[in-house]
Image (cartoon, rainbow, N blue to C red):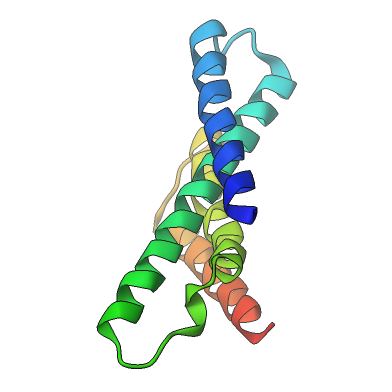
Amino acid sequence: MLKKIIFSLMTVSVIGLGLLLNLTSPSNIGPMGILAFFVLLYLIFLGLFSFFLHIIGRISAGFLKRPLRFIDFKRSYYYATVLAFAPIILIAQQSIGRVGFFEFILVIVFEIIACIYISKR
């Protein structure tokens, strides 16, 4: 059921983002449009990362002798919620300034800490 919800949200987000980018311009979109852009982009990345991690877990389970804990979709969804936030942070930083080496390292450290927290949960 979770797979269907994530896939549906991702599909609706792709359509919504396409409409948002084609029907508006950056100068007249306003703050709610910018927020909608980032939310739709996050939902797209969430769906992509969820399915990507799930597929990678399934493929690696086929090559390994013992099954991995990472295979179930719920666990890959938990990791994807954190990993999908990294591109959004980098895009937001790029839109307000520059993304340098230090900022990129900070995002990676944040992602590592969040993934460790999820793995301990």
